[in-house]
Image (tube, rainbow, N blue to C red):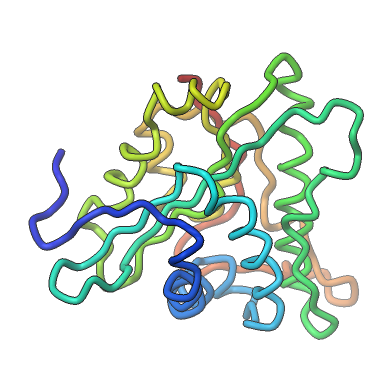
Length: 224
């Protein structure tokens, strides 16, 4: 399926950091189901974005969809190289630490993502490296147009994936819509964490209750 005629896909590089940061803060921060449910703050999210850019923008696996008339970013997919650092505990998931002294729900998101991240090479110890899809986001006004699928097609370049000695693509998928998309694209769920496992210590109520039906975060993988 081709991209709708009013859009174009461009590769992301460090030169795009400022406009990409604007997109993530204006859309992903506010519209991603877990962020929305937890009330993720810009202050808690910014350190993650800085590390994300460092991991992804120097590699040829991150892309943006832009409107042709404005050239504004309306969707993006960002991926990093994830090596099996056997016996190296220093690379165990600090990518997903969201500091928040006021909101337990924000810290809970990081805890869930870290748990899933740590599981991958436990479950697939024979793999040496994979491409790690870290962000797949389409702004609210441009959803249901196939943009996420087109970004995935661009990223799933088998020749390039093998060029970087990766066996496939892995990701921690936090939205119901993206979980459905990954299933359609042939990704296998290796592990999942239900959002209901993270509860308020005093009340026992779940810390993260989404408004779109998302009830879990899934660790998925597809070999290429």
